[in-house]
Image (cartoon, rainbow, N blue to C red; front, side, top):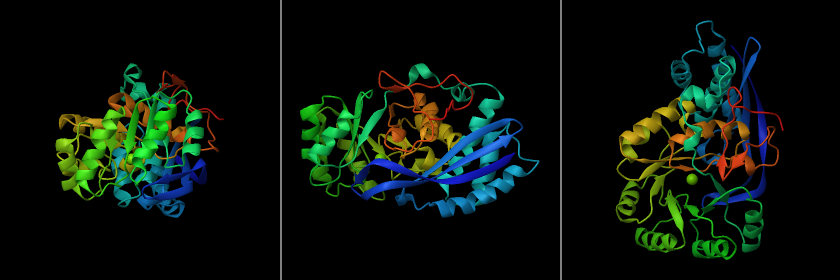
Length: 340
Ligand code: MG
């Protein structure tokens, strides 16, 4: 297998403000794996808070390229191949996902099957996906909402003193159900619980990462009392984290860029269900490549937030189709990506 990669800077349509900071770009890498006449495409999207950059990804992918070029690397067991990729170096989770996604796309193309069929996920069970709004002024929030056509759910970033005002602004113009993501921004558990009760009255349907990622006591305290499901995002990255968080949240947010890709994502879904957890599939700001990969996992999940490719303005691929607020899984082989 012949592996190559190139850096790409994803340009956001609007500056994206979270409880943890603001940004206008996301560093990314696009990867390709060639075998005979077939090419698989993958992607690493690397928001700054997980510590990966184009530089760290290049260094890692250079080593992955050598592994994949070896005659003993076979495409017929991607899980095994990804265990070897994982063992190259710790961390580098998004770079690993870029290898994993390209391998899966390639295998789908060679076997002439859509990826969802290869992975055994059912497009009929696709949950609706939310459209994400950063923290903004009422005028910008209204403008962004007008860009959310085709989506039936809104995800809103909370975690500041303006939380109630943000929700009121949205409720002035939209009655769509809301997912709220506090991005670790709530530090007083009693105030957080009071806010969650208020949010429930505003047709908010879940709360993502209310408290700081390492304060599992606070998360468990809220989870025990909250009328809404509490989902771990920053507190949960990989399968090996599951036991640590399983009793502190109602569910976990699987993101391919955190968990090294589809091989481990599928394992997390099974292991989380076995522990009685709810499942959300999320994303970073990504091209259609990462989003369609995440969409193949989405039918295993209760909630989907896979709108990253609608938030950037230089997506090299065609946008996925939305139907009734759901991402449509293509019937073409592999991910079913086409050029923009
Ligand atoms: Mg989140």
